[in-house]
Length: 66
Image (cartoon, rainbow, N blue to C red; front, top):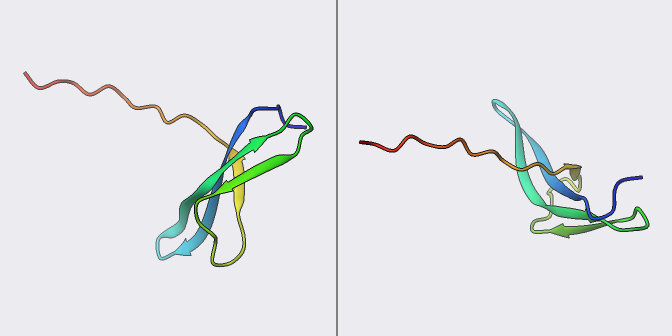
């Protein structure tokens, strides 16, 4: 069972010329009973969605010009 309150990323994955194209389709949240609520921003053309653990993007600090 997944941890309650955990956020999950939802993607629609399509085949492209140079590999797979991942489109962020929304997000999901895990409930206390282990069920999952999906919050979709888009609908996939092929009816398939991919759900995986969400992660924070790390932004590397940029050097300021002198």
